[in-house]
Image (cartoon, rainbow over the protein chains, first blue to last red):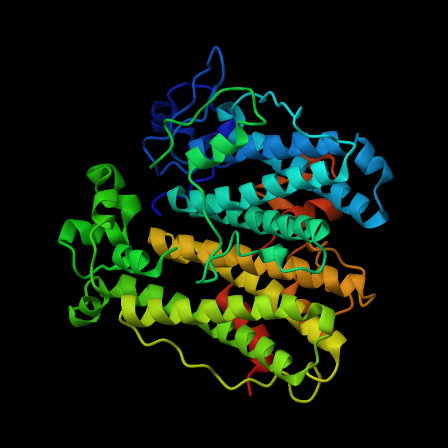
Length: 233
Length: 272
């Protein structure tokens, strides 16, 4: 890695961040929010879009991609804990859902802060396909979201330029995998589904999904158009 | 992932110098060569050719071999542990399928890493060490099921932290990084399952995720596996202050890495 500089990205308001950084943002390290490696010259501040969001390019784009997924998960569990399934769930499931709501909300808020001015806007979600009073419907959706999250982080890792961001993604993805295993075990207790053959191949490697595969799957639940055309490939 | 396809992608020896640069340092070369890496990844190379060619970019290859042999050592430990547990008959019948599945994954990881180190990178895959899972007579994992479960949890949680700690060391190689991440999440799934199993059986009150730096009811010797998990600072921000979420939940939401020395310190308890 060339420059693992910690910068207050939240303070960067200049639309041309590269030019801004060249002017010497190194001195602006004070106010709270942080980090953004400047080793990728093509990192790009996503412009405002009339109708939808653009993730941007480089590591910023990937962080926005993670932020989009965490927004989806956070919105899902926020709805779960308001619903009939949660109200009537047993103690174990209640604990798990309450934990997951907090974990995903923490992830979401973290990415929003990390991205600062580069963060995409709040996504509009549509959970009309999920019956929040029905256990199987909620757990089935939770399984989809958690498995998707793991495959998304695993697939995005190789595109991350900054070792610090890669580590942050690594810290989160294993928690998503812990969630996924627990949800799968609730659906089929005591089985091998927690690490099922539908996800893990003969080499013992979990599946990865591309940006387009993940966002296509997520689009069932996200109504805001997401432009990911600037992400690395 | 199909192993042969993977081998094709990983082979550094059959490519011209620009392609080698891409292989070892995509991040540096990325802007210069555009999407060439995708094209070259499609070239098919028979396995036999790989070992016959001279080595290039030796330092990078040796660094990868070092990391993967370290991972392989841990996979040897895990595989042997589960195989011995299954052979000993210590596992309760209802849980057999779970531990057979975990054993299968660990064996697959051993074989995969052995293949990559030996036949792709041209290194010497580390041999399986001799293990002492009693840790000098302190534990009886193969006659006492709660102890078997406890050490299983210890190994899985260690594995997650170990792979996480190496991500940055293999990030210049996309294929190795992706494979490492894809093993890492499998270990996390195992860890979650075993942790919850222990709580269901009344051995502990832990969850699938790690709360603060707690080792629950695990033996004191395992505390190093959980030290540091109480961290709530990420990217320079205290996430509890940022979100108002309690620190227990915040610590659960992020797993922490361990470096090689820390992990080998833990693993050395179980070396004969």
